[in-house]
Length: 225
Image (tube, rainbow, N blue to C red; front, side, top):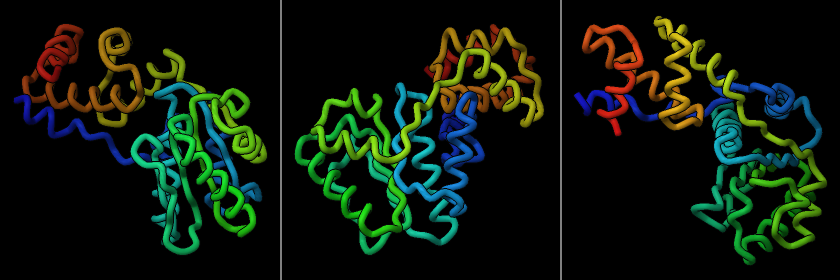
């Protein structure tokens, strides 16, 4: 039983289509415009709290470029501090800039200048704070402010509830609001985790032939915890 639930715990690959925009509609449209070549600005910095969707958007953009048979690469400063790519890239995404050490900040500064001169590559970056509040070398902070800067706003609780209801409805089952509220109070609150829990809940209710109720949700969370 637990294995059946674990089998569906992998989140779907990030895409622009499965990003819930909430109050970030303008940002989502900007990224669509960049992807379609309708935006002249090539440098974009996204900032916001953990779980607001920055990494989702950066991964989604590199995936979208790749699907168009263009060259794109994603880096996370949490795992690597070297930003190398073979040949000219159409899009580079560098996540978690707040994790860069001193040497990596120099590397990013040089990369920024190089890409600015080449006139082609799109550079997408993210961090947890606006450029002026980032603790890093000042010349790099200045560069981050040269391009477009967007604050990625986390979904409100009501927006998360509506997103969960739509997700459930698309999969053919009704999700009472009390279930949504229970999940927000007792489970992980980021949207990917909530959607994975709904997938597991749908499967669990079908296996046991039981209605989706708070006791069933409580039982499920105990099984997968």
